[in-house]
Length: 253
Image 1 (tube, rainbow, N blue to C red):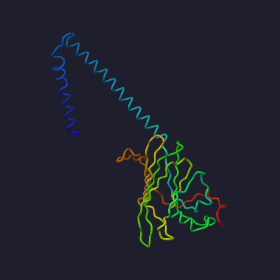
Image 2: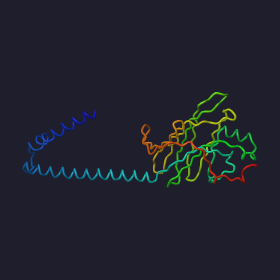
Image 3: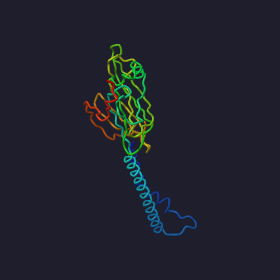
């Protein structure tokens, strides 16, 4: 296809002077004055002006696109996703006043299994999500978790989709990693985590975490079929905690 366009462009370039000669310079309309040389000079100047205008428009468009791209990058919101082990209902954990735990059937069942005074003794896994950057919020946040767990001694794979909505800066979202149908005493194994969200500048982004290959990638979603990699890095599997988040006085003895 590109080869045909190149050949067509070369042919058009070669025949254009002939078309101009026969179409414009080999005849004279009634009332039109001027010699052939005058008209050639006019066409040269006319085409030069058009070329200059087109170049100026092109430069303006490219400059505007560059400024818009820079503005989007300067105001881009980033998301931090981490595994987090904490107590039921985050008893003893210092969080933002608007931080929230996403309720699941398995988590609700676990809450009903123990009296509230014992929540500080029970620890479960959470997926903690927070965003940072200049903008105060991100919106249309949708997360998909590919996970595996044991049920009746058999490993089962499942996808959990959660529509979070809006996440304000400084607010943490906790998704409990426990399901109602999993074997007691077993833990959920994460395979992949995919979070799609939109920024205030209209950019659609995707965080892709692969726990099998230990990779995290941030994509800019150009359209439904095209992605642009913003950054990619290796996930380091290390143990860690939040010392400053733990309020020991709230934990049950």
